[in-house]
Amino acid sequence: MSYVIKQLRDAAIKAFDTPEFKEALADIFVEQVMEKMGGDRFYIKQPDIKQSRNESIREEANHGIQISELQKKYGLSRSQIYSIIGDGDVSGNSP
Image 1 (cartoon, helix red, strand yellow):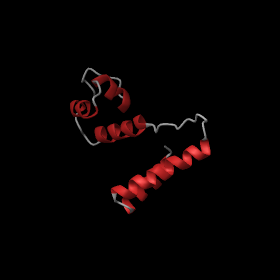
Image 2 (cartoon, helix red, strand yellow):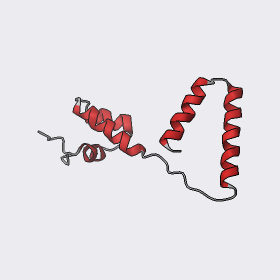
Image 3 (spheres, one colour):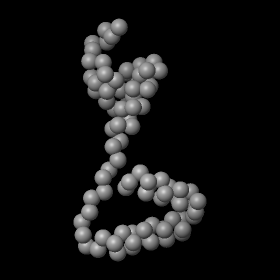
């Protein structure tokens, strides 16, 4: 789902926060997609979650969050964290 479509969808859900309306809106959306696309296959690019995650990791590391805490929070290895923050020294002897 594109970022804009997701934002519009989220705004509509918040504006009409009832289960019945949500179901009706989802049904209309699906019907419109089926009508426009017919039996064709189409590709919807998945958002790049890693880029956002990596930016968060860098920001947290820059604010002094320990590597071990980042490992736990994001489920990554020590070397993966260092690779993301741009420090190749995984020995723990960083200056």
